[in-house]
Image 1 (cartoon, rainbow, N blue to C red):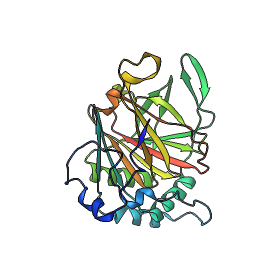
Image 2: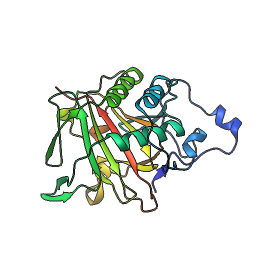
Image 3: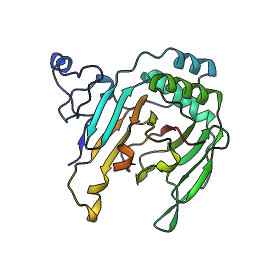
Image 4: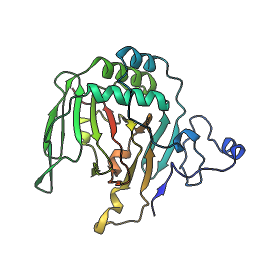
Length: 268
């Protein structure tokens, strides 16, 4: 049974405080681990209101507090998770992205030699000349928008990595998804992290070890399931992508949209 690390929590506040790991301490999260109350809140209401102005959004980025990272580890799994934006800030950013991002239309990917429609909308932004290849197709980066450039620079300050490319996926509801895959490491700077930011509907994100997939599994290694909340950041650190596949599975009960931005450091 897959353990959902971001749902289980302690009922006693004092126990929650005593069980917090020390700063920088890496350890495996268990299903009994307490987590901040913000991670347990319901999805955002994304209806109404006109989109925020660029000034509103830039103000959000310039007033971020220090992040409180949580380590999630298993065999060759090295993740860090934090809430980067409040519910209100995440709501503003979602609405801003809804009006700023230009997505491709009728995208297709190749799976086992057959072409399929992509079950989500995609867009990519980055430095001049950068291209990203996956599932039999190559996409060229659109020049950074002012907001995405500012967000990239803010991430560089928080994470310590100079990202030069972002892939954006928009999932209209729980039927949109992405199958199990590993990112192409040939295009990524060696050992650089991948930073994933989530806005909109909370969705499950599943990691599965390469030795425990399907009928050809050679070992039994439990999958790791995370519930990525609006305003959260997930860092996939080395060597996670070398050993673990990740996916965003179908969740028919999820009715709202989600926008995910994955920042990468790619070879120029």
